[in-house]
Amino acid sequence: MKDLRDAIRVFIDQREWEQFHSPKNLAMALSVEVAEIVEHFQWLTEEQSRNLAPEKLAEIREEIGDVMIYLTELAEKLRIDPLEAAKAKLEINSKKYPATLVRGKAAKYTEYR
Amino acid sequence: MKDLRDAIRVFIDQREWEQFHSPKNLAMALSVEVAEIVEHFQWLTEEQSRNLAPEKLAEIREEIGDVMIYLTELAEKLRIDPLEAAKAKLEINSKKYPATLVRGKAAKYTEYR
Amino acid sequence: MKDLRDAIRVFIDQREWEQFHSPKNLAMALSVEVAEIVEHFQWLTEEQSRNLAPEKLAEIREEIGDVMIYLTELAEKLRIDPLEAAKAKLEINSKKYPATLVRGKAAKYTEYR
Amino acid sequence: MKDLRDAIRVFIDQREWEQFHSPKNLAMALSVEVAEIVEHFQWLTEEQSRNLAPEKLAEIREEIGDVMIYLTELAEKLRIDPLEAAKAKLEINSKKYPATLVRGKAAKYTEYR
Figure 1: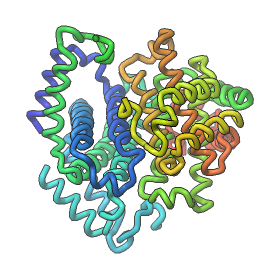
Figure 2: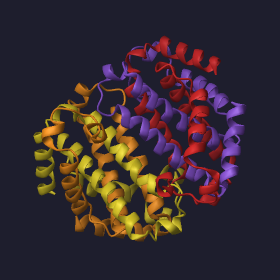
Figure 3: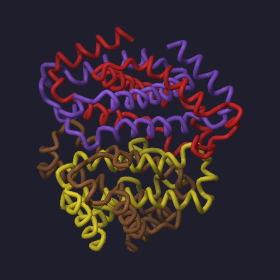
């Protein structure tokens, strides 16, 4: 993770792109890259999405790489550790969606209140 | 990272949500969580986005957590390591956008060919 | 359509929101509203998405309204008529995806070349 | 509007794409097309986004066309009139954001309560 952060910083510095990479713009870029993942799945059935061909997987791997890059950069700019943020959010979600209440159901938590 | 993956798996298993979490659906959920980050920035200037109030930051931290959770889960389901994917993509990007060509410019790489 | 454009303009003027509604920000807001549509569908099967309950439909109707509002406002700001743009794009798509080639197939047009 | 709906239906029928166009999938496609609009704006300043070059505008016009196409198709499938939905939502928004309270402020309506 630290390696990735460092490599991203070097990449940005060499290109003098820091001026374009405000948190606002990084949030936009993150959403664009996620859409490129979604694009791979939009016409597939769920079943097909569980059984992707190797070439398709290789393409999606690149998009996941891009999403991870922008997420890491955005988080660093805001001094947030994405791993810690994920763990903390998982605990919040555990309380928001008690297993006994939501087991086997996909509805939103507001629908359980 | 491994800790996070394990914690997510336990969270999903306890709720029997595996049935809903096809890669297709996870890609959708990922895009929805990223939009919740974007929502925080949509009416801010870039300058404001670089100087967020602590309460705003705390909210964005939760959204970044959600994005990291879904990204980790999607990647694991496809047997992709997001950190490795990011490093590999950064190398591809380094060739796609040579520093000497793109320095200080934000245009898309196709515009340099 | 003209009525909608006028009603939006009055709405924005009364709130003095023009200052926030740059095309960049409207594009972000549009993406956030579309994600609220996606959120309704993320855990549904395709079959379920074809058979929505009336309450769910009423909620989605509101989100479609929001998307239409931002799309109309963004287009007007860029002096684009969204209906004309859609018709023109449909003709482009007709050539890009010849019926004889793509019939019954969902793959991207680049995969036919 | 009716013309557009008819033209879309013919386009889909000729390609036998109805089978792929569940509301769930159309929502995904809509989000992908919106991201293509966002992509044009991600590295621009707000000022630049108000002063686009003609070639850039021509590209964005195509993306707006695509968004309008999928929005129209999704809405028709759910028997929703997007124009009526937009007008109804604008009235809801007028009450949610009273001009006297929000004038010149961009914050979310929950922040006024």
